[in-house]
Length: 264
Figure (tube, rainbow, N blue to C red):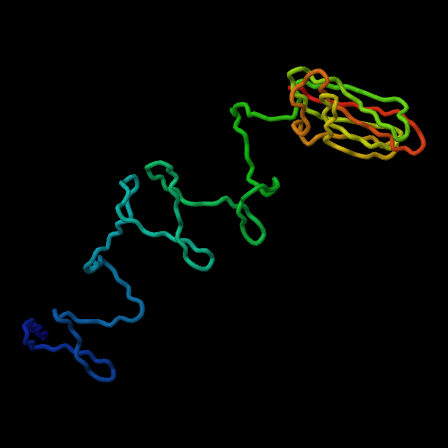
């Protein structure tokens, strides 16, 4: 006949003490202050059903996290990035030059290169630069060119310049009240020459350039800019001129010269 189980007391003085046979002997079960059996779990335990976890006490919310489209959180988390070895923080710059603030992340423009990227600074070749395009509705872009405002041209020569002799070849006078800007002078002769070119005014040649040529070698002078050799103000007797000296030891020869200039 089956017997009826006895009622287990839950008072401080228990009539029943649970034990467990560990193989090496019989020991009492460990219980906590509430009378619950404590279990030391090793390995993997499969749990079924609903499990309620107790997080304990404390503040477990992150004040620096906010919902999408919500107000900016009052607190913030500090972000860092690896420099290849250590963690480094990003920096921002205030782009508002006035009284306000407009902070933007500080960045640099870089391009790929062997061994790592390189910073894009200064002038570089096309292959080492960032392509730049002009907008389809771009307004006119001002371009400065060296085109003449009022180009002038004149030719002068002297025949049979004697050995050791010199002659001054004056080109057409600069228009009154205009400024002459020399663009080019060409001088040629069968003889080797000493050439002095400059500005002729008040019957005097102010020499700006002196050169020597070999026999039959033309001399071509083009100033770096049109402002390199200028007349002050055009008037009668004011012109560009060249003084040529025949350095040939035997023969007299003709000398030919031409000049181009701008008047503004």
